[in-house]
Length: 133
Image (cartoon, rainbow, N blue to C red; front, side, top):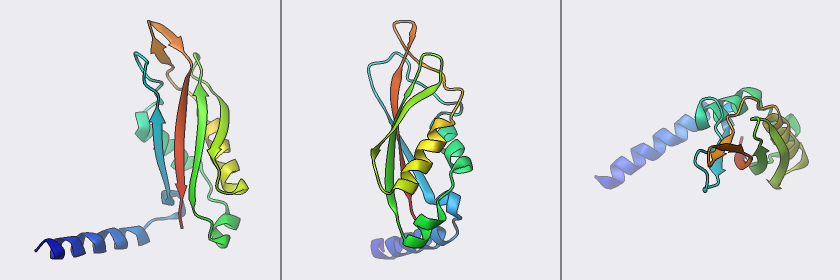
């Protein structure tokens, strides 16, 4: 019975993958640091980050044609005024994909800064983008 359920689940996951368009093929994961009273927050939380990136990212056609897939990890600082700065690739995949990830993250506006001891403080944030065909 378990094998039957597992087979059905795997089939559903496989078929769901074929229904995605190129903007849905990028998975976004994020990590935040501890030690803050309140972490930096994008409007809508992590779902807001995901939505922003999915709406604004362009999977470069050259990378799609060459079959380039994988992760690009970008680290940045959310400042005390909620702006994004110091955007850097910490795990590279390919220059085209790296540049696209940096471009999109650099456009993010309206963050609520992290708080510590009642004061706004800068906080590093990391977004992992998985580009797959």
